[in-house]
Image (tube, rainbow, N blue to C red; front, side):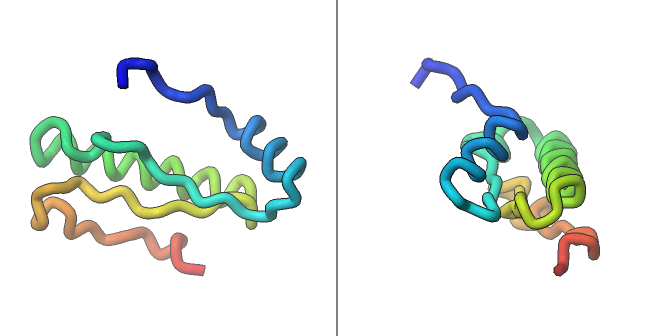
Length: 88
C-alpha cells in the first residue's frame, strides 16, 4: 500500500497484448474505487468509468472489454441500467 498506481496507458496495453499474442483484454477498476463518497458521488464515478470503458471498447473494437463498475455498497445505487451498446 501507499506505492501509487501502476503506470498504464491504452498504447502500453495494446503493445503488451500484441507482444503476448492476446486479442482482448478485460478492464476493471481497482478497489476501493466505488466505495468512497456518498451515493451520488459513487453513481457519478461508476457512470463515468463505464462510459470511459465503453468508449475504449468502441474505439478499439475487439481489443478491450470491461467489467461494469457498480456504486457499492448501496444496492439501490448499484441498480444501474447499462447502455445497450454494451451488449454484443
